[in-house]
Image 1 (cartoon, rainbow, N blue to C red):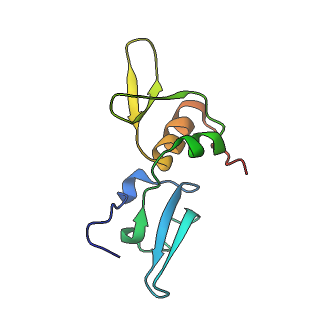
Image 2 (cartoon, rainbow, N blue to C red):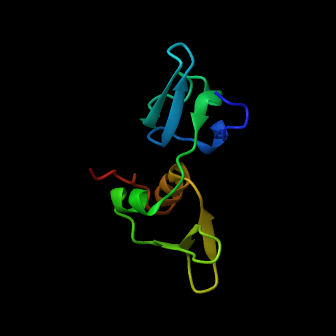
Length: 107
């Protein structure tokens, strides 16, 4: 794995989050890896999944809006407050914190 690759801070993860994972023993990337145990794998090998329109559809989310100005996604709290959301695991955590439920990936 390249040193310049983005990594996820382990304290930002919870069970059920989706990340990309690099298995060093197999020298192979696993896309859309669901975390089942936070301590089973080397957390240095987790890479965040960028939030895209495709991911928003998969997660059935209509509460996030895309900004044309900086190409990011924002969760609208109220008319004055918004939160920038860059990665799938961030949206999963935000949704869980607000609703107490997990976002479900729709195939």
